Amino acid sequence: MYQFPKIKMLRGELKRTEIRNQVKYQLTTKEFIQQRGRTTYRIALEHILGFVECADSEYDRHAKPMYGTKPDRFGKPYKIVANLMYLVTESGVIEQSRVSFYTRLSSHFAKQMEMLLGSSGT
Figure 1 (cartoon, rainbow, N blue to C red):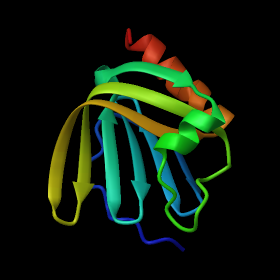
Figure 2 (figure 1 turned 180 degrees about the vertical axis):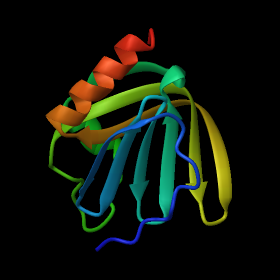
Figure 3 (figure 1 turned 180 degrees about the horizontal axis):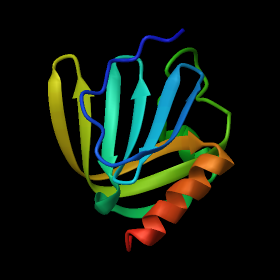
């Protein structure tokens, strides 16, 4: 079993959770959360400006593999453009603005995220 840091408070209602290749993905009605090792990335849906599928080559240029030399190959690569993201580490919380966040999502996760983004007016 993987040991992810406990998220103190989820904002919104939890809609989906997936764990694969030592990465945990969560989607609520208000935010997207990804945990890799001891690092948590939190992006409020209201801060997402764009969510598009991208090419494998673009993903490979920007995504950092957690272990080994190759990034994860499961799912399709996506680029999330947001005006605000929180990076939570053991050292504290870092607020980043104007970010492009690259991730791979299953088709079901991506569809549900698109639906939530569409219903929130994003």
